[in-house]
Image 1 (cartoon, rainbow, N blue to C red):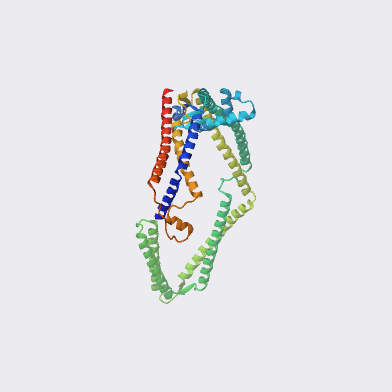
Image 2 (cartoon, rainbow, N blue to C red):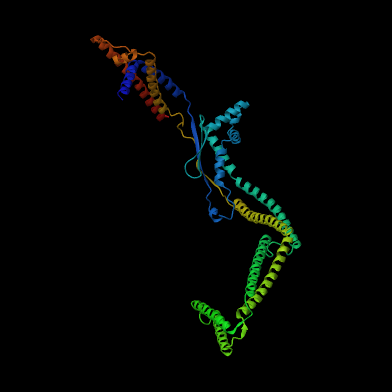
Length: 511
């Protein structure tokens, strides 16, 4: 940090040693600048403010019923179009600026200058615009602003009506086309339905779904048939191991134990059913009847045993039950075979129609897709036509845009440019800055040594000693006179600035 301060101090001493360069450059630039400021021509600015009211009372009332023409967007576009070449040419003709342009080059230069001087600004509030133009001739500036205001209003009015009319014409043309397409699609659908009655999609379900359902039913029926056949074969093998007749004693013992087991199983089953149902339930009633039959059968077998204690032959009850079960299994197998045959026939019929039904479904789907698209577009176009018609009525009978000139074109008496007090103040400041820069540049070009440290750093040699300068009284008087002369020079510059500012204010008040 100390090195930086020392470096800055060395720069300040170098500039102070060449302070007369600062004074001379500041005076030269100030004189030239002040003369230039007073030679600048005055330019007057004409301006006007216009408010574009798009929030009419009908807009919220007709929201959703009419077409929004996007007035705000059109207004913003028109503000940008005011500096386009056709608009500038129109402004030049309205203000007679084109009379002075004799050649194409003059015309181009005139239009370029016109575009540079025109200013269109948004004042920060919604739809409030300021049109301004600067020129040396105040009357010409006012005419240009008036022309811009006229073009702005005229170009915006009627634009919405033209857009709505074009939209209505286009919608009518599209409606006629889609109406014809819709009629053709309806006729094609009618002919297609008449040609493919019975195989249309939706008449019995989708073809592939029906085919898959038929295959599933066929597989399930074949599985049930195999299970029933296996069960029947198993019963037949069990029947081969049983004797048709048994001794009465053995039969009674065997039958009694089997009947007791069945009765116990049925009683357990009835207990489970009573947990869910009452005694009046059909399952409980049937179980009771079966238990009663088994008990009756048990009593009869015991009575037969007592009546024939010699061991006569009786029929084997297991053999009889197996015979009955085999008969039932044969009936089940026959029923399942009929079901498999029926499902096989349906599946074969669907497979035989595989070359026709998918094609019918594809054509029908395509026809319906086209019909739905045409119908949707036609319905939407009908709604838009009514909306456009209502918008046209609103636009023709009311004003959707209201232009209000808040401030008409006017030109202040004081010129808008240049700001001479500001420029007169900046000129001496610029001169002083340029003077300091000149002194610093000369100090860097013609380097001098101000102290022993700088000499040691500059030469890189050891410093053996220094000679002290002793000023005489005469030398000090000369140095004070030079300082006073420098201060007087800078003071005269400040005084001249003050005189010029005072003179300008007096002249401005007098004008």
